[in-house]
Image 1 (tube, rainbow, N blue to C red):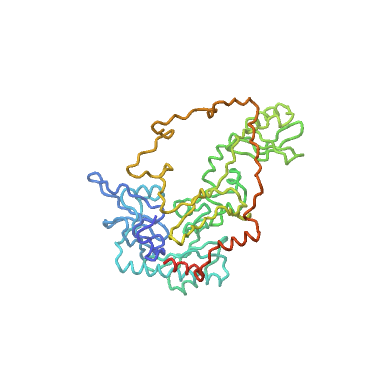
Image 2 (cartoon, rainbow, N blue to C red):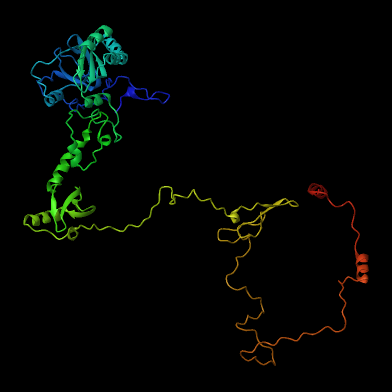
Length: 501
């Protein structure tokens, strides 16, 4: 939740209201109560409740009586009674819900309750803001004075009163601290009334805030108000490893969330035998090593073979314990071992990117030389580009493209091609099926006998090869050869283009 003044600036950086939880809109504060009775009118003759809830720095809330019967609403800045002087706070709740909150926190609304003096004037607000702006610098100086006196304490926060006459120093320490000399040094250095208040480490984390290991804002700084003690037994009951780095929170103590599910675990453990239970067998006494609360399983092992664990159900363990009470020993634990049925799951691992191999970058990538794109062939005479499609046959750009069915579009006026055989011309004889008809006067060839090959006829007389290299043939070739024109051969491609032009 955030108020309107906590929005980002024009440059995109977070601007922040710099009020540390005291925004006037009361929408980014701890434990904000929604007034669902605001639009409801009271019965006739009944006066509204005269107490209001006022919030101060870091979510500290107190109740005050509206003795002057001022018209107050949520978000008004008021001057309240303090000792000494007055304090300045913001109204967070009015009406009948204040009575409910006072009963919840144990405050007596019929007894003496501090009063509200007035609505804060502009002068009161200016003094209050000036005192709040000095808190950071005074906190640094206060820590330096505490270190100079060798005091084992930490100044965690400072809260100024609304009129600037008193400052409350919140500190944490493991033991009691003698800060009498420290108060004298603070009074002489800051010229104000000093009040020291010790808080616990959990309260300090709640005042400062932060983000936990779960990724969410700390419970103590958002909604948790009562800090119950947390013991390591809570981790033991939940079968958690006793690792202080994992079990400790921002405050250095055990996490408060260890108590959230503790009652559920305690109810589940009521049906379990004690962890120190021993099962009497003929091989020896079996000791419990581990339990699974949700599956109701227990692991036992023998002292001579501690590495071998046997899984038993809680019902089986109770049955063995009943036999042991009767003075009977079981043979072995293997007779009571629980075998969990494992479903066979196909290993179809595939990550989000669709790459299964973890060593896909170790092997060099194979390149297929046949998949290279073929460059188009350019014909210089007619300046036509002939590209070769995938089937390897060249295709001219001026050629008609084929349609989706694989056939070229038919020109207008042309009849479609008939399916089946080509139409026979008029007067023509139909084609006979089967073998070609045998000429008249010939006998059929018996089966299995090959067709006789015709005899080769040798040439009659002597023949002269005209291509033979004889003086007579060379003389005839030279006489029939045409003379070649001179200086008509182009030297390069450009000369050829010029000659064509």
